[in-house]
Structures are given as structure tokens and as C-alpha cells.
Image 1 (tube, each protein chain N blue to C red):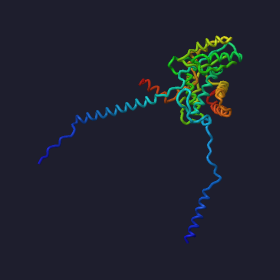
Image 2: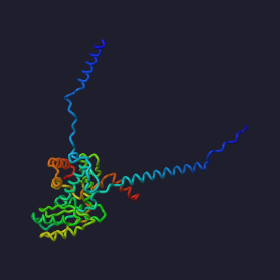
Image 3: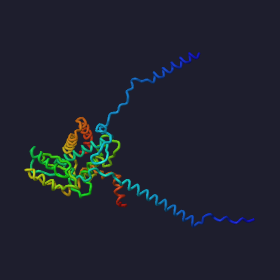
Image 4: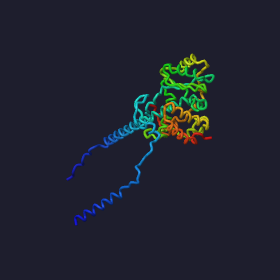
Length: 155
Length: 181
């Protein structure tokens, strides 16, 4: 007695289709995983005081104690100014202010109204802008890789 | 017989406990790290928002105050000129970036365990050949001024003198890496 051949449960075509679907799903999951990893790696906690700018005013001559005190008082009473430091001997004043609230020209005007000594804003040259304290983190190999990745996949 | 056995066992037990008792051994004492002395991992309110480790807040305050002194010092300001460069509204300022990274560096250097510094090492960072942002090699005079600026920043934040001395000693250990002349 000849038994009839059993019908295959799945055809070759449907096997291929299932395999393609599985590969597609795996590929999609892998891609999503990579994107999530890069996004997490690139995510950074917000830097504290990110909008606080440092600026400097230079005086023509060293300041005496009384004038220095009056200048510091005028600067700290200007809206948006966070902190100031006066190096009376060198005739320099550094101050920080919130970029969203103030401009350094306004602080300079307040200083000029108070000080008898001529004062001007310190201007950073283009070459000086390109150099700075090296503790920037830019040299980290991890950051270099992430920076490269972000160029390929801009978020 | 049982009594003899009991006495024998008690005697052995006494000998065992006596042998284990080591009065000469001092309890393990570990000295606090500088980070712990500055407040350590105790969580406190951050004036900039959220919570922060007290040690980190202390170091950040010192770093921020020191940056003002540095930027006002004609000897040091050329090394830190970009701090004073204006950035557009909405961008993170160089002051904020330097404060964050220098604080990371100080945290790690003083023994913090929950922070990392991923910037360049001190030798590479201060070598103009390896770091194009370093225009010129640092001098001993500039490094002296830097240490003095950090000490002044610490004094402005009422850091005890002995701890300022420890910070100074820590910075001295980096002199050979920073001053490459």
C-alpha cells in the first residue's frame, strides 16, 4: 500500500517570507538599540549656571580703596550681575551676569558713572578666543567618538 | 568520665578564645579624603537648582571664585582669555563650561567617587604640540599665580586654612605636568 506524501506544513515561499520578517524585526530592534545608546551617551545633564557670562573691565590706573568699594557697590547693584571681583592693584574688574537679563555695556556705563578713572571693556582677540584653559573635556576619546557619531547622525 | 570530658572541652574552648583574642591589633582607621573633609557625599541643596554633594558644591564654589581672580590677573588671563569671550544668548558660556570641567577635575583629584573627569590628562593638555588650544607653555610664575588664585578663591569661601594647604599641596604635585619648560 502506497501512502500519500504528507503535505508540507509550510511552503518554501512562506518560510522565506517569515525569515525576512524575522530579519527585518531583528534589524529594526538593533537599529533602535543603537539609536537609543547613542542618544543616551550624548545626553548630558544641564550645566549649572549655563547662561552666566564672565566679563572684564580694565581701568587706566590702579584704584584706591574708596573708589574700588564704590565701583563694586555700583556693579553689584546692577540688575542681572551675579558676582564681581576687583583687583585694585592691577586695575581690573571681573564680573558675571546673566545673559538673559543684562549686557556688559550697561555694567560698564554704571562703572563709568561711578569711577573717576577711565574704564573700558576688555575685548578678547580672535586668536585669544581660539585658546583657553585646556580643561575643556574636548580631548576625551569618548567625546571625540560621540562627536563623530553626532556628525553622522545629527540629532 | 563525663565531668573530665567537660573540663577538657572547656579548657580547649578557653585556649581557643584566648588565642583568637589579639589585643595588639589596632582597629582599621582610614583617613578621610580631602573631598570628605570638604563635605563629602552629604546631599545639600544646590543654589543653581536641585541637590548636590556637599563636597562638590564646596569645590565648585572655590573654582568659581578662583575663576574671577584668574580672569582679573594680568599674568594668568592670557591663558584663560576665551573665558571672557561673549557667547550668543542661549549658548552655554565658557565660564559655565570651565567651572563644570574644573570642578570635575578637582572632585576626582580630591577623592570623590561619584564623579568622573574625562578631559585630557594634564601633560597632554598643557603641551602646545598636543593641544592646539594651549598657545604657549605654562611658566612657573603663571602656575604660582594659579595656585595663589585657587587659595584666594578658597579663602573667599571660608575654607579652613589647613584644607587650603592640602589643596595647595595637591596642586604642587601637578606642577611638573603643567609647567613643561
